[in-house]
Image (cartoon, rainbow, N blue to C red; front, side, top):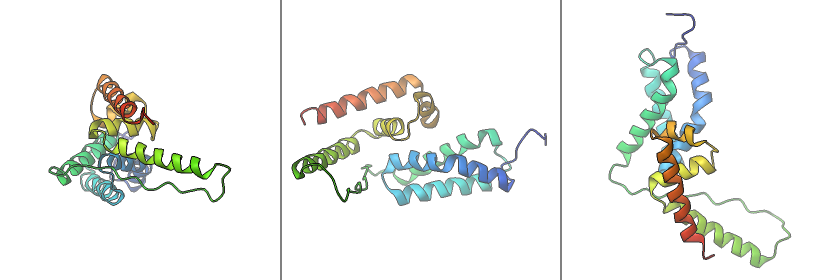
Length: 170
């Protein structure tokens, strides 16, 4: 083996991959399924599969391997289920200067926003959340999802139009 080539089978390299990609991989799957436990399980399974195949996977290709495996695990689990994203309730502030009416309106808007995002088609929701929550660039999203940058732009445009349509009257 060439000295410049890292082996996935070495514990320090495997840990480096885990530390570098587990959070993004979790978010990637979570945005698809909306279930924290399911996302954690899929991420764990993907890393187990990487470990079992470490001799076959080049270090430079490990990130791609992980995302492909995780995507396939997810698709296998939900082949016949409709996906609904469930958001955890945001923590409320203990003291505030806003009026109760404002707080109620804000809470109602957040609920409408969460529902609107949850009702986006999966592919649009995935791109929207990767961009807005994870702050990924369109190029990064393109690589993660396995589509062109133009396709990412189109999905984002459709997601934003759909959200404007749902929330524009508020």
